[in-house]
Length: 144
Image (tube, rainbow, N blue to C red; front, top):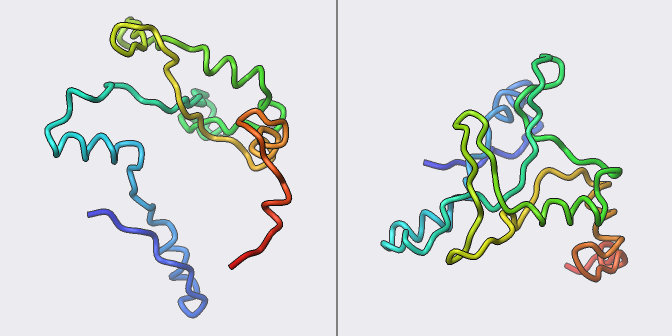
């Protein structure tokens, strides 16, 4: 069963730390695929991820090895996004194989999404219009 992390409750003191160590388990990347499978529509799915993730493969323990790299402000520009969008294959080093991204036998971009971007990187992408027109003042409006 999937559970959300409980909200922080000041009255619980140190117990909050234990409760907050529990992780939200919401597999959003697999949710739609699961619904398709339940409805016997697995043939309609592409069997690959749509999310570009760069993994930190450092062996140095202080660098939190095998965690997704967070792209910072300096990494978030139109050229970097174009490079991600241009990827049309994935090489699996441990299996010594290349998987080409296709839709109905036509080569396509592998990734529709990318993660993880810092707040500064996200603001740069939005501000430079990389993902489309964006008005920063919309963030300042506080409508209930």
